Image 1 (cartoon, rainbow, N blue to C red):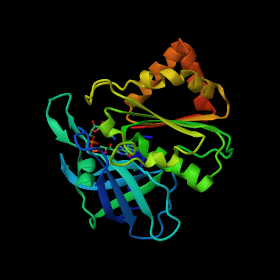
Image 2 (cartoon, rainbow, N blue to C red):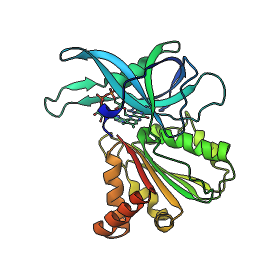
Image 3 (cartoon, rainbow, N blue to C red):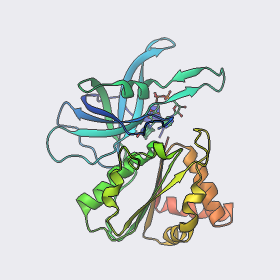
Length: 284
Ligand SMILES: Cc1cc2nc3c(=O)[nH]c(=O)nc-3n(C[C@H](O)[C@H](O)[C@H](O)COP(=O)(O)OP(=O)(O)OC[C@H]3O[C@@H](n4cnc5c(N)ncnc54)[C@H](O)[C@@H]3O)c2cc1C
């Protein structure tokens, strides 16, 4: 779905309750976790959905409204006004055409908000990652950068709300440096809550060189686990959920093609998984 296809109405007022940097000091990237409270009760959202944030800016022809999406990073609370947690990376980018540096409107706006500030949101939208009814289903969750957000909520939901999960849950998480590993660094290590769960395991993939443009070394991360992952993929009770920037799609296609030693075999395998609803991507 293209961004233009997400409706900008209805709009809801929300208040920023907190804003915390969750990347470690010294990290090139800045990611902040914001907790928002919707000013009214009617905003029911579920794990895996995204909200829209509207920011007024200046366009070529006067005023314009920027609409960008953020995936919810926590489960909904049962009572009170809806509270929404999002993890926002401050984005700046260099225009390929004129080489000028621009700041991303919405991400900078959000990262600059302070507790008490009011913002305008839309949604909630989509629900790409559903929880299988069968508790013995395996989940292979693969996230890059802010793509960890939906999995933080999903893993919490599985172990806290659903409970007694029998299938394997494997979280494969990539970032450009250990300082950027969201919810798995010295600042915030939320995933340690599940390390006692016998069915849960998380493994990290980092860039061998800590530069934003360097590719993530997914192959090193799964070298020892390639057999397990391939076995999971071949099991009809396995669901693979992928989230994060678009680069993750190509990286995974390359990796899995190498694992099955053929581009064609991987393309066919993936197409079948997608068709069965067992390979779902949330890429942006
Ligand atoms: C379904 C969906 C869910 C999303 N969930 C999240 C989320 O949970 N957290 C989040 O930070 N963003 C998320 N995004 C991206 C977000 O909507 C914005 O695109 C991003 O914040 C940049 O918006 P901007 O207005 O600041 O800058 P823009 O001018 O729109 O973009 C600036 C540059 O930043 C790059 N960029 C965009 N998002 C990221 C990112 N997350 N990490 C690194 N570079 C990026 C773009 O490719 C572009 O080059 C999601 C997008 C979609 C479609």
